[in-house]
Length: 427
Ligand code: NAP
Ligand code: HSE
Image 1 (cartoon, rainbow, N blue to C red):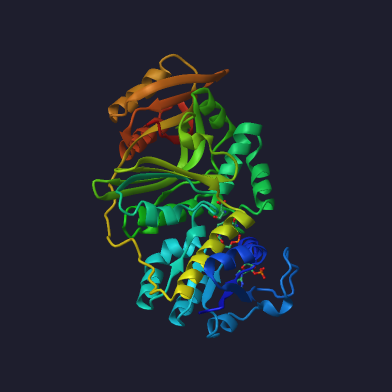
Image 2: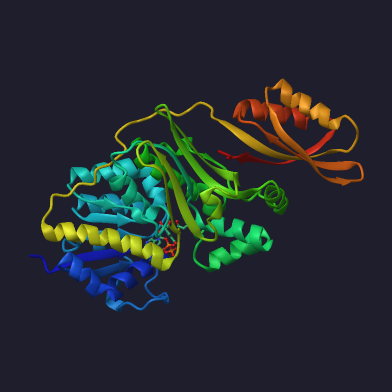
């Protein structure tokens, strides 16, 4: 019987320190469930002299990855550095050296997940990545286990805490975008480079991971349509509010008769939708499946302790199997290669600045009509001298027809500018 399972942590930032804190502070709770002690024996960082938020014995720290990868005593390597490289190479090397791996790295899993899981299976090892999507929310375990026998048709998610925090601050407190972003960074929610959060890359990685598990298919990250929140304005939040909608950065993934459509973009969502009430740094994933129907998973999508807990639980699950002497497998659930839907229909909210004179509305409506775009409602929001602001809400339409209509409208001499276009999700 094993008395100890030895773990090395690569990265001692927000998540690394949270993981270490849980493993040390809840040591007894963990030993009682695993039947052995989980001991952290090495910690990899870039700068071993940096002052850390959490104290750990000095002898644990190293800046040489080989102190971990070439150490035959280490059972589990926990990658919490972030970024594609050197994280990907370290994970592959750890697997080649017979070590189980836990990671919170969504970029690596979205871009290289199948390679990594295949390597883990070839070597009869476990590779766990619960914290890579929605921080503290146990969504991957639920998809891989509890929903594994069901057919999932749609996954909608608020999967980025930083952008949800910013949009909540903007809508509830009228904060400016930059100010809300700075607060999110200070709280440790945003990635080191916030572009990954605000331009939707982080959410796209997470939707690719969820889709690959939920729809059992390899997902090409380049096929995930992506738009961030940096163009969302206070005015759109205000107008959306008047229409009974709230703006969320929403990931929407669908399996339409065996073909996939995956997108991340700002969306106008009716206030009564369960996802509309998800505020601040919280994340939520709303699932439609054939057998269970509707399900929602909700909780903190980022932060030291919440994310550290997901990592620690993965470590514990592997440690338990090591102690029981189980045969290990990672079981990549993306065993098909599905195609992608050519074009999906959606409704659109469009705000434009036009010349305020008779006949303008009719001229624009005619162009929409020529391209087969049906209008659900139109509102004249503001009139200042010879300028007016108009908001159009379209019925569901193919994106290419809508974009062609917008291009033609933009060239009309009565239109000053198209100020914003936001997808509407109202069913
Ligand atoms: P972080 O605070 O920036 O910490 C990164 C750590 O990795 C630092 O300790 C850094 O060392 C170390 N590191 C980075 N590159 C290294 C390299 N080449 N060699 C050695 N050490 C290196 O990052 P984080 O927020 O904890 O995120 C870690 C991972 O978790 C990322 O994949 C992230 O996407 C994911 N994640 C984060 C959250 C969250 O709430 N923050 C939630 C879910 C998932 P130094 O300290 O010496 O600089
Ligand atoms: N930066 C991410 C977010 C946290 O804001 O959701 C890590 O996944």
